[in-house]
Length: 523
Image 1 (cartoon, rainbow, N blue to C red):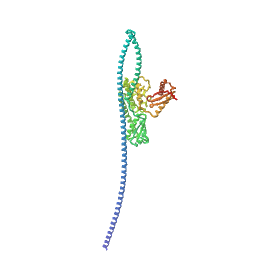
Image 2 (cartoon, rainbow, N blue to C red):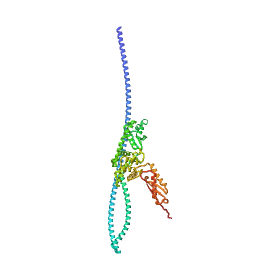
Image 3 (cartoon, helix red, strand yellow):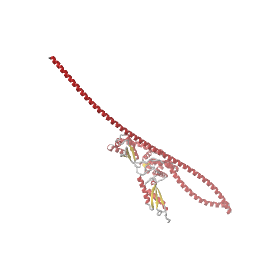
Image 4 (spheres, rainbow, N blue to C red):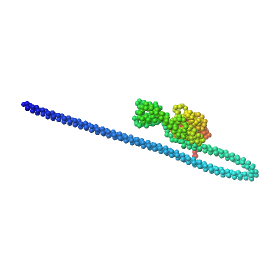
């Protein structure tokens, strides 16, 4: 009984163990299948995510490639356009130089031909005079013999009467000859003066590019505008305070504008802005530091510009303060004409004219170069720039003739020598030649209207016309009200009226025309 019980127990135990093993195997199988399904689901999710990321990466790469390609193409086209403009400008400069050389060669050949022609004419006149002398001697001899035969006078009496007769005739001929010589001398003097001025202009005339009161600074990107403005506008306020220049930021892409009438301040602002953009650190303390450093560097730039002007004018030995003031003129314009280039041109023209007149060409160049030196500080010192410039020249040891030429060339004081007259003349030539200066359309139209009003208000004037860009006015008068002999007085009166009423560069030519017409009809 005990054995059966034991056997039964063993069977039951084996049965329970088999059921437990089967149940465990089933549970493990189901768990493994669940893990496999979860892994497969995650794998599919990873695959989908990877595919989506790959597609987005591919699209982004394509967009960036297209943008890079477009930017590179734009930069390449800009570079090509810039190179083209540079080549065109170079071509213009070379063409201008070629034309200038041709003009000089033509002038030299013309002068040589004129000299040769005059030499030939002189030789012909000399030969003619010799022939005339021989003919006159022969006539005198024949007349002496004739007088002796007719009057039966002795040779001494005949000689006396002949000399008296010849003296009367010679005096008449001499008067005519003197009048002719004076006329020829006047014509020759006018021609020589014209040639002298033309030669001076040809030697020293230079091409100018007109300047304005604004400077444009290019930005690397539009984001830079926000950084320049700064939080609550602190950066732009600091920059304007430190430089004394207005900073204009508008909708023009990748550009800011610096505005000021002071060219030196504008240049300091440009250099400081470019350094700030390149550095990238734009905040009030850094702006102040860069502006102060740029102002110190500007002193060196002004000195270099002044020394270059001295070299261009072939001058040495000038006081350093005058050299620095000359450098400031590089950033000063008058009617769009650069004052430093204008001063160099006046200096070279004065040197040519002074050499022809037998004056010291070095003093002439110094007076010409320094004649507008007062404009360098005209915004800081009150008074006419000629008197200011004369005072600076006197203070820094310039020659008295140079000082007087500078301070009197606008007749602020009495002209007491030829030097201010020369400065005034060459200054007018440089300022009035075509292309040297520019005016706004509004000022030009205003001056034309004022000129015509001055002429039209005069009694006897029928109509007036302004031509030659406002440099000449032609006045037509009524012949029944203005006699012929009154025309010079009328022209002089109009000229004085224009001088007293208007301000203008150079000079204005006044031409008065009187014309009488008679009409009739054949029936």
